[in-house]
Image 1 (cartoon, rainbow, N blue to C red):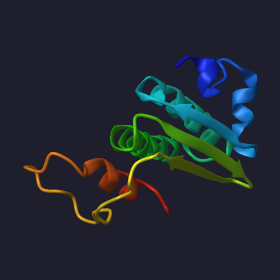
Image 2: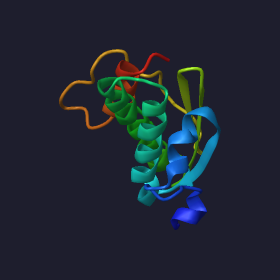
Image 3: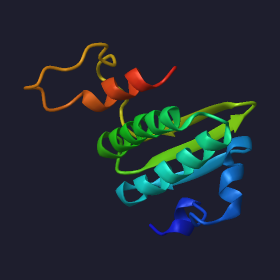
Image 4: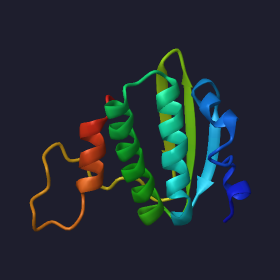
Length: 126
């Protein structure tokens, strides 16, 4: 999948900063996760979030996108929507959905999965 397939503008595109006031849709596979992080970081920064909150939000979105790709069919549809200082990222995949509730407690060290969803839950408002 190349950048044009993902709908991702080049990182130096001045239009990238306007993502926070418009819809931006991407279909990504594992090779496109970095593109999602860049777009989300630019959009979150454009909403006026302080850098520490931008970083936390980018990590949360990254974890959800990776989870969607890994467990939802190899690709994810990501939509970034924002205006009025708010940002919403929606991630959709073709998997069966979550088989368990998102953990509210950190999974034990011997558990090899579940930290991404837990981390995203900790880092986001909703």
